[in-house]
Picture 1 (spheres, rainbow, N blue to C red):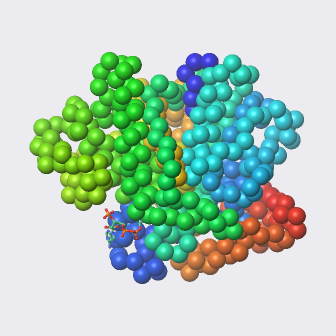
Picture 2: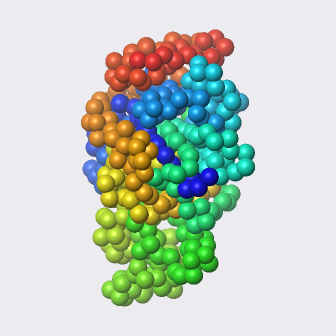
Picture 3: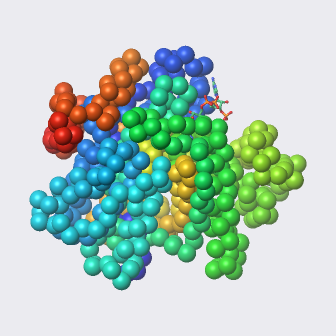
Length: 448
Ligand code: ACO
């Protein structure tokens, strides 16, 4: 198979959300901390009728319907998630309900888990399958689904929730430049979920920021090295039309892009002009450690990177700023934002993607875009996703109601023998919702 990659995408996020400005005031944080300091506008969350399974049922059903895909045409289904509902039974098996109905049980793949990286692992599995000798000619389907919730405290505003479904096959409008790829994997305790009775992670916020930036540097170096070896010329930010980041919160994305410019400076790359070189001169002798700690470097690089950030990154930030961290779906929601904003001008362009999952695992990889053919065209993907309408038709909760919802969800996590309110009045038609968890922990869903 040639030009294997992404044929179609659909995204779902809960219609229930809270404005960061309201949360900020409610939490007693200083004004601007969440909106300017973290760079976030709004945060989506699941109420008691939604979870990672219902969201992924919604996303998959919607993708199949809107692109006219017969469920029998799916040969591999992979799920990336870090929201554990069951320690044995995969989310993928819940999604099989959609395919069993159509007589298709011949579908490989299960779930992949490592913090926010599981979606990328699932994606690579599907792409590799289509490129391999075990491919049977059918499509691969990747689902990233997470509900990101934190205990009360500084991490709470960095939550979010979404599911994204991605169809994989040959002759794709979004194909992988698989040779241009760099990974960084290491052992770290920056963010992990050792308490199996709680949905909340244990998180060392500061360490997670440094781990993220170190992984970014390392992946970028690897990607540059491989590009240079294969192409016989240097890689720099000038060779990327857009850079898409895993987005826990927007400020980290701003810092990350600036960090890539600093990397280009240290490599004496063509993307760095004379003015920038002069301003960065004083920082050329910093050790790696010093460079992660230097507030001055952070400030100068962010200033210098601003015009490039506006051109190459800003169009990718819409959904992450409006919905929050969607863990495994975050990177792909950022990419969906780019498709939404720029689909008319993306043909021929290269997009660099950076995936990070705490613990830690990270990969930077490259995508090449072309317009494609209906229904698998960039313009159709943008119109199917209908991001603008989904964002507009949301319902804002006041902070008190949000906190109340979080408390209820804490009780419900890992619980059995309850029925939900079954109140689906806020959900749009076609959305799946949780109705009951019985005395055997079996979960039941309905479709609005
Ligand atoms: N107006 C404007 N900016 C403000 C204000 C204000 N009133 N108050 C604070 N700020 C700025 C700070 O200066 C800081 O920005 P800077 O880093 O550019 O200086 C920013 O707001 C955040 O403030 P901090 O005091 O650093 O925030 P805190 O430490 O309380 O929490 C953190 C932030 C660590 C990100 C926390 O939300 C967290 O732990 N989140 C989860 C972990 C996470 O997402 N890690 C990212 C990678 S791992 C992953 O994807 C899960």
